[in-house]
Length: 445
Ligand code: PFF
Image (cartoon, rainbow, N blue to C red; front, side, top):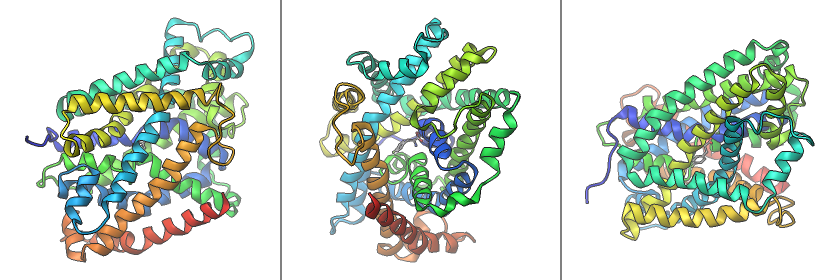
């Protein structure tokens, strides 16, 4: 059977941007930046994107395009005689773990969207938004229903295929998402008192850099936000034909993803400060703090519908890229049809997501890693352990297993001035930085 391909390079770029821009930019970025001091974190995050993120993104997409396979198949094809493909399995595992909790959080977003559309959320609940959110996520069935619904949307898009499913969905979702977010940002900066929020984001307080945890969070956020290392970008790259040039596309994806994080910071922090709320209120920032703010704002309901629509759209354009990794693997390795593979993986992820959801309530005493609940444990293993390991392995493959000429050729950088710098970054600098930051964290767990 002929392997599927994108209709155009722009289609690939939109899909890759769709994968990168997601809950990570809005939900995760805002609370991680809030907890780590705002401006200085933003600078570190951007530095990580520039010297680790974008160079590795180019590595990942070029491996995929060169091998024209899923992640396990790509490693097997490029390095047939060594066990590199094991890294591919780690990548598949990471996508399954991430999708399991991603879909649960995206389900909360759908629930809020629905609540604001019907008007139920618009009234301040008797015991406040915080208690309402806690009660909702700890229920047995309701969050599982929204998680299931979100998985069905994701599955249907992936099941249709690369061109008519994933590419088409991103062509619609991404422009709408950009419009919604820009509209929200313009509104947010016009709020009285927004200056303080902008200062939090853009006037760095360098003293936070004394804490090593900030570096780790910045690198972890860069990996998560760029969908790096675990095969989504490799699989998307494998649907590119060899004639399509990579470096420009990859820089565009990295820049766009960072821009979306900054824009969501501009949406969220002015509102947080304008209403006198602590920016470091953690993962609940988007689900408790923002509804409180929407409640106090004029036109808060309309803004809330737009916000949760944007959040849900951003989530779905990323979840389809996560699902595509195991689906592409099964289609090749188990010779399954796209339909059967999508269905099988979605059912598996649904079940594993049910444990995540129950972990917020009935099973909140289950703490597999440290004192983290099921969701945080899965996030920790996938984002902080598997992503850097897989990213490091990719850099080592192209930096050390390939020779310089092969590496530059695979990424279209032979005859390019930045080729030398890129090679230095992926061969030495990125691996060393990943190792230092990673080991430092593991020692401190
Ligand atoms: N980059 C996505 C986000 O920022 O929400 C999340 C993600 C997608 C992570 C795909 C990893 C991945 F492979």
